Amino acid sequence: MGQLNIPWQDLSEDALYRVIEEFVTREGTEYGASEISLRDKCHQVRQQLERGEALITFDETTQTCSIVPVR
Picture 1 (cartoon, rainbow, N blue to C red):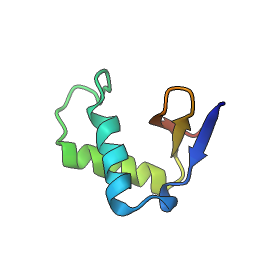
Picture 2: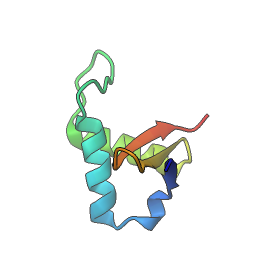
Picture 3: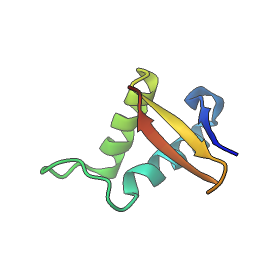
């Protein structure tokens, strides 16, 4: 078992939004000193996915998704 990369385009709009929303509301996610609305945070993450700056991963061991920066 390992980690899989999930193309964001392969997810339905609803599934994509839920993955992004879960990621941005995860405890410990930090966005700096200014408050940003949930909607804006989700929009920013989606833009990062669309630009290829981030990708969705799925860990088969823990059965969880995450969004990570592309290096």
